[in-house]
Figure (cartoon, rainbow, N blue to C red):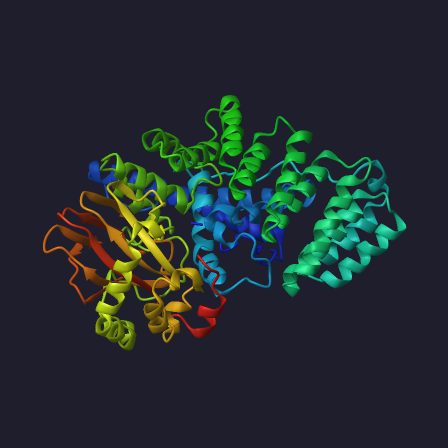
Amino acid sequence: MLSAEPYARAKIPEPKSGIGSLFFFKILFIYSFMRNTERERERERHKNGRKGGLSGSSFFTWFMVIALLGVWTSVAVVWFDLVDYEEVLGLCYLPWQLLTVLQGWGWEEMSQECACSCSGRFLITCTSLFLDKKIQNKNLFFLSVKKKKPKLLNKFDKTIKAELDAAEKLRKRGKIEEALSAFQELVHKYPQSPRARYGKAQCEDDLAEKRRSNEVLRGAIETYQEVASLPNVPTDLLKLTLKRRSDRQQFLGHMRGSLITLQKLVQLFPDDMSLKNDLGVGYLLIGDNNNAQKVYEEVLNVTPNDGFAKVHYGFILKAQNKIAESIPYLKEGIESGDPGTDDGRFYFHLGDAMQRVGNKEAYKWYELGHKRGHFASVWQRSLYNVHGLKAQPWWTPKETGYTELVKSLERNWKLIRDEGLAVMDKAKGLFLPEDENLREKGDWSQFTLWQQGRKNENACKGAPKTCSLLDKFPETTGCRRGQIKYSIMHPGTHVWPHTGPTNCRLRMHLGLVIPKEGCKIRCANETKTWEEGKVLIFDDSFEHEVWQDATSFRLIFIVDVWHPELTPQQRHSLPAI
């Protein structure tokens, strides 16, 4: 669902006046409280037959509350440094889980999809984090946003605090190059200063973002390591340093390096369950579900109500096909509202698990996922999307604009069929069983010619004329989010309701060998059947389901194409799925 950054840090202007900004938030909360209170009073007046209206004394009382609170807040902010604005704005940081597919891109491969997917969810994420977690009682109007500020200075760094603050001030004002020079000078002057070196790493990190440079980011990662290697590093600074290093390593696709950093963190801070949760994610990112499972079992043994651990543990159980066991973990984890649990993938897998056990609440969770911005609709639940593309379950050839491809497929369907039937000789072992755990029962195999825009030369030796025919159509052979393949399904097969991963493609089905009865496909709420020599076109990001209840096999040819509304630049830059 999933974040997409989640890796590009959101640029939010700092408040020009801490006093004015905090006063604004207090006004907002008090106003909401007043409105709720007055509505309740209004209802009471109606019950008692009295007219509405706000009395002069009530108005004066509320006016004084607001005025005094504003004055108190202003004084408190100035004299007691009560609010750390970076922590407040940090509520808006997008968690990694929103779009894991972006992991490992680095700056050079960030595409329009990232901007579309990220910006579309940023406000929703901020709002839900702020409202769902903070305003749970309608009568709660005073909210403390103060958190314990991390201690970043050791005894020596406190003696050069003025110099450190001056350099940091440049960085916070966006004068990154000047700040970097200032911190470099401090590192040269005070080589044993952890805070100076950390400031240098942050500036390099910011500069990498500004220039979209992987090379600069690699330098930042190295500098973060230098900070952690210094003596007398404050505990809070050490933790921040290694966490950021791990995050940046993941961004560059250095998953194993990130895992080593996370292991070091857990070794240093064994009682910090949030770090163990991050370690579990690190194992998942390299495909080591077994070690991830062990980590989350440890976390849940210590903190049984940890929502983050629950959703990930449920995710792992479902991947192991322990469908019923996964449901309570996914459900309770999402319901916890803990950071990192409001992720489209968890709604996706919870709904899917419920569908498979016949639980009718599945669509309730899909609906909630849609309302929270994870799915385009209840039916269209792909997670890796470009926003704004035309969305409908079924398409006609004319609507796609790929009429020449459709005509070529239908005109040459017997040639395509004959080569497919020849490949079906099991001795060659070219048809492979479906391996995505999409079948409830039955026998379903596929023979793939193109995958993620790459031609399988060996496979094409088995169907040379078909491959030669398709070479003329880059909208399909160049579709790096799709496949071209034969699909054979035997009697007694049922494919669970499921959705594809992206809205960036459309899927064509050419009927080759179709029994007269018993074979059908549903996409969204419309069911169709195949015909030999005819092409069906649908958007597989919508929920679809297949039944094969005939008395003989069904053979079709699947051809994925780019969504017609994608620009040439998008087709070139979108990462493969």
